Image (cartoon, rainbow, N blue to C red; front, side, top):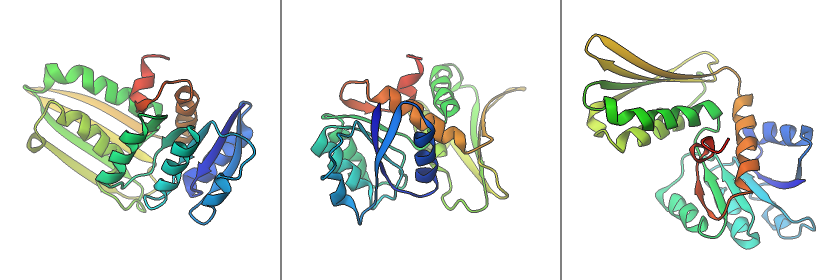
Length: 226
């Protein structure tokens, strides 16, 4: 049985809590927020993993507890500062730690595919990224779009890439990467049809993460081992 503490109880936290309760191999021992942090340090049940889908102001709760207990940490909290990224990289020297903007398995595969083809297309195709989300999503570009851009920037200058963000309706998430060439178009696209894919992907990653040595991981690292 994998014993989990949840940091944050927004939409993703609630869905994770429900999914863990329905699983056969996981148990949630505590849901914590910034007003209940002390409860983490009074648990009688050891925690194997803390899952953090909170707010950037609450990420430190998860960082402190993982450092204290030595448990693994999986986070999907967005809008982080450079200092918080540095803190995660530092903590990853002591525990297994995974961070991603998006835990859909298809996005991890998409990033892996983009890495593989970039050397062959970067000099002969124009690159355009389009992303679309529901009307209530506030950030643009999305965190997932930024993750795709980070992959592209390893081999393509940022000025050579344009990003287009659309907001409307109830779209869970759609990311389309276009390579526009001479009389040909290569398109790599991921569409989220239901938000459950993010929950299922996070728990899939969590099961993998607790078996890894200390280090900083993303879902991409898991792809080749499945």
